[in-house]
Image 1: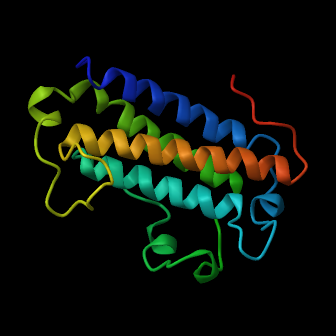
Image 2 (image 1 turned 180 degrees about the vertical axis):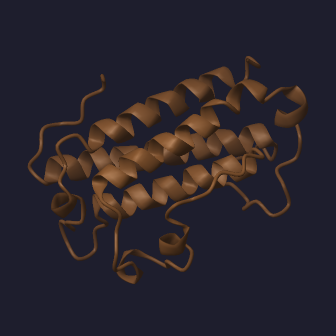
Length: 165
C-alpha cells in the first residue's frame, strides 16, 4: 500500500469499527431519538455517514449501489426524513460499503493520489487539492461524526462507546 495512504486506511478501519461500536445495544427507537429539537439523532448521523462513505467510494472510482439513496437523495436535514432504516440495516449497509472501500485502498497509488481532486468534487476545506487531500478530509469528516455518535450514545443513557471490538 502507498505509504501516504496507509495512515488514512488505518483511520478508515478504526472508523468502521467505532461506528459499529456506537450502535452496540442501540434500539431502533433510541437511534431515532433526538435529545433536543435542534440535535440530530443517531439514525440521521448514521445515514449521513453512510452517504458520505458512498461519496468516498465514487470519489475513488468505486460504483457500489446505495440501499438508502432514495432516503438521502432529497434530504435537506433531519426534518426532511420520515422513514429510517433499522439499526440492523444501517450496520449491514455500513459493512457492505466498508468492504468495497477496503478493497480500493491498496489500489491507491501515487498516480491516483496525486491527481487533482475532480472538478465536480466540493472544495474541501483543506489546502491539499489532490485526491489524497480529499481522502484525508473525508476521513476527518467521518471521525467527527463518529464522535457525535459516541456523544449521543452517552446522552441516551448508554455506556460509553468501546474502542475495542
